[in-house]
Image 1 (cartoon, rainbow, N blue to C red):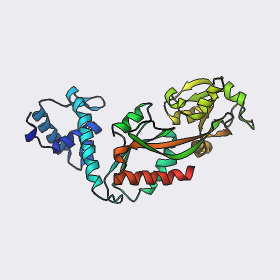
Image 2 (image 1 turned 90 degrees about the vertical axis):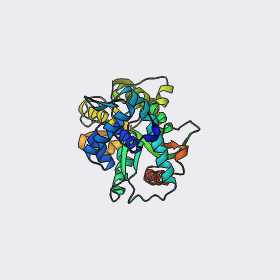
Image 3 (image 1 turned 45 degrees about the vertical axis):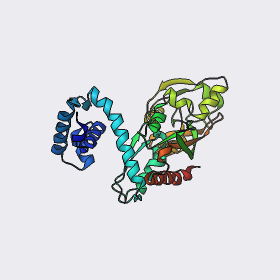
Image 4 (image 1 turned 90 degrees about the horizontal axis):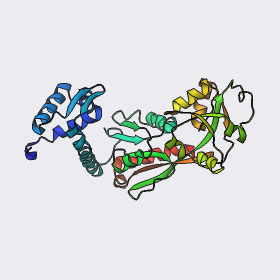
Length: 303
């Protein structure tokens, strides 16, 4: 391959196809036509001597060669984007920036919903959310795959800058007609260790302070089901005799529609904090600064 003869625009198209797994969606992302993207992919295939993508059950699947070059190319393009952004003022009203964020599902109603309302008049701004995967969220920040990550606790890495964002209170939820807790006025400490719980995955649960406090007491909860999503936790508690420990904001938002009853947490550690972390190289980026300041203003309502 002669790199000097390579049209670098083809690399942007490769990055978009790899991200979207579709030539049609890549075209929409880049503001091009689908035939133009397919034609560019054909030229890049010929230039590199590799098919790069093959059709699979979930879209355009990258070949081994494409998987090797994708992260390197993505980081190079992001670095160029940050360099250009740092030399220009950021106007959220006209910017086409896509912010890539790791946000716990339980904080989406608290932070993302008001953020989307705030940016409704900024139609070119977009947001891509990634689920929290422990410890993957930290690697996403370090690789700059994510612009920002929000997570309970702290980020212990010299390359990651972080700041306190918001506080959330943990409460117990049970269905309103629960045979034991439906008519109860309180949910006791003994109830906490005797009731059947639906919880989130082990890695996520271990980061929450009340779980650490309860484990330190020498007693363990009776965990009946481990769910992958907070929505599943809510609906399981609403439809079965299992109870759950969830953020108060999340519980109050859906208590009426799901018929849930809310109790204070009967063990220490009901109040926990979330921080947002980002790679230190993004600190001076005007667009990133705008995002951080906006999130801090939204988080200030929950401190």
